[in-house]
Length: 162
Image (cartoon, rainbow, N blue to C red; front, side, top):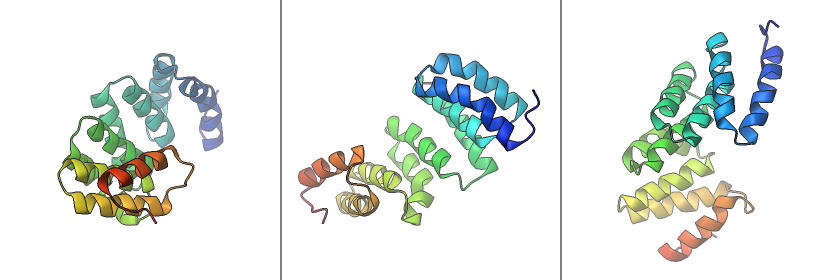
């Protein structure tokens, strides 16, 4: 089957997406590598492969792919967020902050803003942390799992979300 157009590529990715949803990363990776070999510019497939690597603790491989996506499309917010998370998970606060800066500056990415606040708190910048955490709460849906964490942090750092 020739998958020259976007619709055909999406169809071919569907069964792989099901493997990812089932957290069957080991089975998804070879299929994604084959797909990416055929369609190296497909950001969705690259992102799925990077995410699978990230879930399996293969940080360097994951990071390389997220960087490749951003080299193709610097505005890919999902790749930027997850690249930052690879540094956050290693407690490389300053590096994560640098990567997330465009997302935070946009004022639209509550998750990157939330995690940037956590980074600033870990760097000892309490006032900046509070400012970022409050900003994240403005756009964060109240039913989002991060909101409960945000409420707990607000209590610990003694600030109001309203």
